[in-house]
Image (cartoon, rainbow, N blue to C red):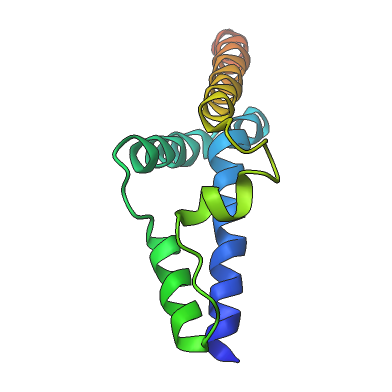
Length: 124
């Protein structure tokens, strides 16, 4: 039962990390200190995908599933949980471009909001 929970927790953590990596820049509009964590998260997402690296959460889930006697899920997180659910199968490249655009929009918004606050704060 314990390894099964670890496998499920790793999948949930994957979803949370993916959401933060893509949408976290919008949170930084309200909480500016988050921008550096979001930039690091987005950079990790790009690195894992571009270099075909095995994400530590995928490794953890795979090991936990194995020890729990659950069926393996070869192919990684995107293939098993995201493709076909969040975006249609076969459109991974399009989905990545859209995610990249969302990240860039959040960063541009962050810079615009931060730029507006800085001169106003300096003039006081």
